[in-house]
Length: 89
Image 1 (tube, one colour):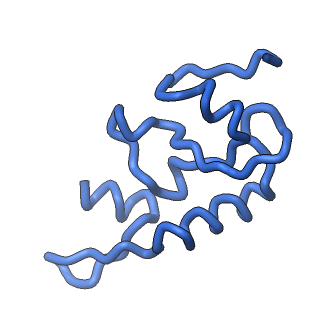
Image 2 (cartoon, one colour; image 1 turned 90 degrees about the horizontal axis):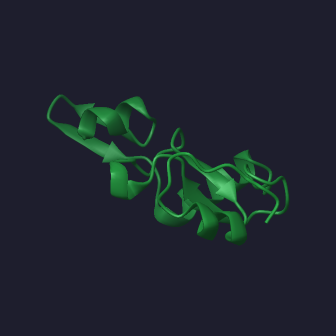
C-alpha cells in the first residue's frame, strides 16, 4: 500500500523505510475540488464532494489520481460502483 500511495501522489518518501502523507484531509479535499474547478466529473454541474473513482471498498486510495469532484447526487448514485454512467436522472 505504501508503494501505491507514493506512486499515486498521496505520500512522499522520507527514507527507504518511511513515507509521509502529503496532505491533511481538509487540504486534500480543497486540492481536488480546486483542481476540478468545483465541476462534477459525471454530470458537469456544481460539485462539492469528493468521489473515489476506484472505491475505497474495492481497494482504492485517497490519492489525487483516484479522486474527483462530484455533486452529491452523482456521488450518492455512484456509491461503490466501478462502471457508473451518468444517465440524466
